Image (cartoon, rainbow, N blue to C red):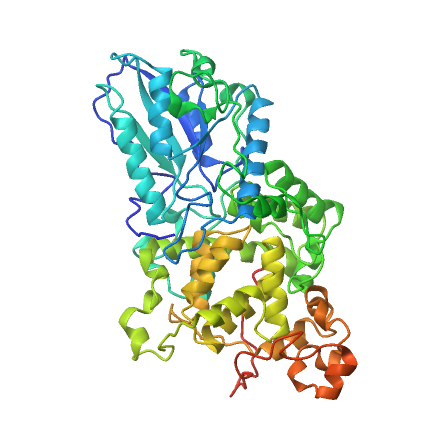
Length: 565
């Protein structure tokens, strides 16, 4: 989960080929390496680049379940599982759907469990055995800017360059945002972007135009290479008779289970069984993503009211709920924007249709922010650096009490809005944007806890985890990017956005009989009232772990940015 600004020259085609020795007469094997954030066929610039480079000679699509990122043994620096079982199941579903979509077009998808550099080495050796190599491999993938991913890129590049006497290449292609980095209208490009969103947004909206959403490749462009016996080399599944034991979990039919990825039986069952209290059954894959967009925009005609409903917390339709599919690249942000434009032409243009694209621009901003600042977004002092230790108005001395962190994670803080949101996250992997802002503010600013423990927990639990948005939002929420410090008044937020307590009672059954007068402030009940309403503070529901925040000036409005999930 570390980022680096040293991502090479950003652009539509970045970090290009490192090979200079291949002859024009050499055959090439064009491999498209799907990553965790581009699991789609529509508007996929990296895939289109692979098709273009193949010149009609076929491509070999590959996806790797990298044990450094997915699986029970992939641990963060804080000791947490990086990817919980629920998100791992979403990834499995997304990859399975991608394979189905490729197979329907006459292609296929090699799926493997292992590090990409190892998998590609073994696949290349199996497809092209013997001491004399008959082709030069060219691998294409989507460009990422997080340093862990960049280290993987470096290893993959070394693998393909070492295949035979004529080195291969790795080419990365930008493709996960509305705008490309070289389009940004700032001196110095991405390194000149402002450190707060509003001036970034104002200039980008004024100077830039969102690019056209690209379609999927034609069926004939996705066929497997016919110069080599690809199917024979990588066909079969786990436990196949392949002479290469390292390829036993690598084939055109293999798909790992959660159990194979190391999750416990209890975790696997919970991940495969959607909680009926959840806002939506999120199923992974491009097909489900496009169906959700069709349903929300066109069938239910809800886009026109998005702005008015986006701060809700209960039910499937208060917001688009696109975020899990956007995070895994099952849905293109440019396609969403193009559908917004079509909706404006066919039905109505209003603040809601603008606001969905506005929210997508936040995603862009945090990826560019990570490209600019690198690993600093993961540091305790954030992008403020030394200024966070006393010079800046947002400076503070962070603490860490493991009991406080545990109470926050488990939804036992004594603040119903915080607890309801944390229990929803634990049970479903989802939380509304309004909830995310509140629980972040509470942990970082009310309990003064090292904010990285919150970001790390979100990394484990969220279905829609995106390294850039998650860590960027937490860093900003803690005040460590230098912008306005938005400390939320949790009680006021509760009354503003869950005025009758419906959401709180939905997730905190111990408070179901507490009247609205007390449901957001149960500590105000007398012992007699506690007995009357069936909840004993400190027994059935915890007392507050910190004193309620009393705002000095802004009434706890907390600002916020309203990024709908």
